[in-house]
Every structure is written in C-alpha cells, then in structure tokens.
Length: 333
Image 1 (cartoon, rainbow, N blue to C red):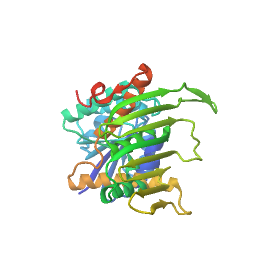
Image 2 (tube, rainbow, N blue to C red):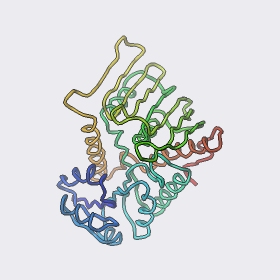
Image 3 (spheres, rainbow, N blue to C red):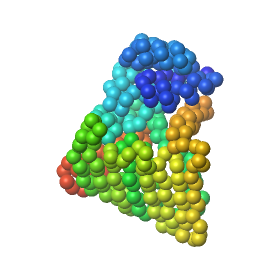
Image 4 (cartoon, one colour):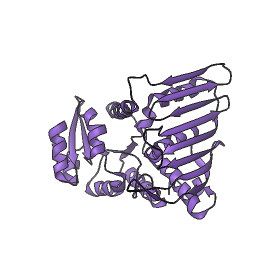
C-alpha cells in the first residue's frame, strides 16, 4: 500500500519536524500546497514529491490524509478553504487546533471555530487527528505505564508551571492523566514589552476536574529557554509523578515503596533530540493507524478539549468569576 500524504503549509514547522521523517518512508508519496508557491516548490525539491497550485488540485489526488501544518493563526482559514475545495478522507492538525492570535492568546472564539470545524468534518465523514507529540515523549509513556501497572490509584491533585511554548501540550497532558475540567477560576497579568517584543502576561488558574481532582496551572512567557520549560506534579491516591522539560526527567513515587524511580537523559542527549524524536514517533503512530485502518492515536476531539480549557480560563479572567466549563463551553452543539 502506498499512502498519498498531502501537506498544507510548508513553513519552518513542516520542514523541521515533519518532512524529514515523512520523506524517508518508502510507502509515502508527498504532495505540497502553500499560499506561497515557491515554498511548496522548495519542499518538493528538498524532500521529494510534487507541489500543486491549488487546494482543488491537492484534493484531486485523493490523498489518504491531509496534514494541516500552517501557523495556528491561519489554521481555521486553511481548513475552511479545504472544506470548500472538496472532501478529504482524513485531516491531521498541528497544535493548537485554532489560535487566531497565537498559542499564548487563545480566546473563546478559537474554541467556537474549532468546534465548528470538527462538526463540519464529522458531517462530511472526514476523520480528524491531532499531533500532541508530547504524548510520545519517553517520560509520558513511562508515566502512563506507571499509572496503568502500579497501585497509584486515581489522580487527586496537580500543579503545573508552563512556558507558553509548551502550553497547549501541557493542558493536553493534564487531560490525559486527569480528565476534562469541570470548573476554573483564574487571574491574568497584563501584556508587556521584553527584548523588543510584545509578550503575553502570566495567567494563573485553579481548577477542578470532572473526576474531582483539583489543581493549579501557571502559564508564562517569561520562563527562559535555558531553564526547564515546564514542570508538572501529579498527585495520586497512593503516590506522585513529576516530570519536567522536554522529555528530560521523570520521577515516580509510590507510597508502598521506600524508593523513587527516576528517569533522566544521559549526558550525550539533549531535550531537543527528544523533541525532534517525538514528532517521528507521533507520525509513525499516525501512519500505522492509516495502514491498519484503525482510528488515529490522538483524535481531533483532543484538540477541542484542550481549547475548551483555555477558553474557560480566559472567560474566568475576563469576568472575574468561576466558570462551569462543560456547561458554558459544551463540546458539541
């Protein structure tokens, strides 16, 4: 079986994190579309495949999947244009699903637009998937294994400190380990200037999950990149899991044991090696799901759940009140 994979958006994310892996797959043919035709031509010359001049031409090739790798600012328009151009079997999205003003400034409208996109995809029978490659970090896989195989029990509380570059990923991981949010209260700081750039103000939120677990999350544009980019502490009935940075360290504590299991990178590996490898693992899992005719490893709905959390957080800040997440931001309508 040869898979025809279409790429919409041929910017730096596609060239650095997706195309090197996809170009090595012997059963994958690549087709590229970019609003700037020269960028699509450059990708075809570098990674193989062919460039096309329109979305109609892209879909005429009957691709097995369309990977939408545009900037999050442009994703809603790009996917809307895809729907207008024709039908796709499968759509795979970069994260966050929609973020018109960038990943550090998600708003309520982003959630509503994302919900509309998934509803439209469902109506035409297009399967949707998300990247969320942090799920494929070694530390995440080991943590999930520890929860599944040990006697940690259910998650009871959580604490997260996150650089906005990792923001949507860490909210997704909170959903993975704890489930969907039920209620959120939040405070936000003002945007500021730093290093000649406009930076997003910090946000701090307290939340309760549908499972009953409670916790806090602090997002910041001010965490330096030479420091850990995130730190997550997940407490369970019978232990604790802590992991930090881009697949750098994981600690698993069990109440029944005197010992803590710790996993951390050896000296000759970097977090950026792990980061790049996580895209390969995410793509490998997605391609295999297509080969086997199975659902994607991470459905598009996961991107909507992540935006649901962010939209509720922003409303909690704007209206200075607790937000009932599932009631005020239902996932289906």
